[in-house]
Image 1 (cartoon, rainbow, N blue to C red):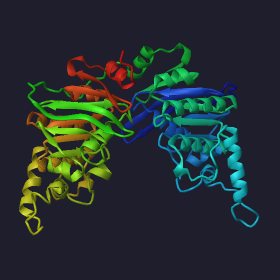
Image 2 (cartoon, one colour):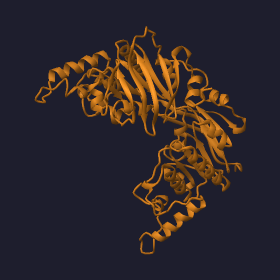
Image 3 (cartoon, helix red, strand yellow):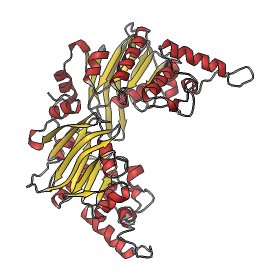
Image 4 (cartoon, rainbow, N blue to C red):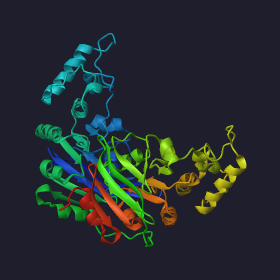
Length: 500
């Protein structure tokens, strides 16, 4: 039996189809330790945590808890063994009280089978008292602040006396005072024997809170170090590794005038005073770590969420956008990162999906009747131009590959005469060959005068496709890099807020 480690994961492998997302991963957590887990987007952190918490099964490898091998087939298995996860997104039931949330699914009952409300409130109060918190157990959770809701989540985890607590970016929505309070609470839990895995992108939190830190890259564990031995430079090098070969070589062309710009864009809680522009013939990438605000930048420009401040200009003219309908009228298209839910309608044909945004203004008569011949020719035009690979425009789009589905979504906006194309992680879930085809399509469109703005979480993608890269960190643009000066270390430094 290992007397030092409460949790050991050895030789963990996980594949999804042809994608090998975890490769012989090793991770160890000591008793009474706060252990940081770092890595760039897609490094494998989330997959590892989902395996340790029973959300995913491992393909191979072993996990031991208290020196004994364990099998995790479901989250309940992990909970029963004393492994609890607190996710970045707060997971509470807002209409219920604090006490009801803490013991959700595990309410005490009387001999007659009825819930013992007095005992429930008493037990909830005891858990909160152990944390030094004074939140009323009878308060509806929906009335609490985000920080207080997070404390309820921690109390819920502690109600089953966990051995291991996993926290995923817990300070993402907290201010400095709330973060300081959370850290004090975590140190107290550590003193009481709870071992904590702490996932973060913030170097300052690693230095202030953790005892050790493990760095992951490309589905592998690169190194585990004592926090006292690490520096910013060492962490960045471990996270980035060697420069990766590009699957696409972007062709430089002469840039023209400014065709699209955003000034002082603000979305409360998500975007803080963001300004950027696109010149004719160039592709601009907005890069950042997950949750930095890139998604909200695109959605607010597209009118999908309300902006609190900011102006959008297309070829020097201000665009008054308060809704998606307004954005479409101005020729702004948006390709979502969630293709299956926000991009395609699987049961409709390729033709119907391509023409979806053009039905009202381009394909309908004044009596609202769709001009079928025009619909067919419009769909065929972009089907051919984008090189969609399938039987034809009457095939159901749900049967196409991810790359071909994405081409159809791009074609939809081109059919609507898009002047600006906002693409949120457009190559997510597509294979390498399809990625290169999508990049070539976007390059061609930029040369034709379409303003291309890509949100990307992947450094190799940003470096291969972009003429200029804006980097976001905690809701702000903190850096702008031209193609010739950009590299992975610079991108990661900016994305982590290290700009000196």
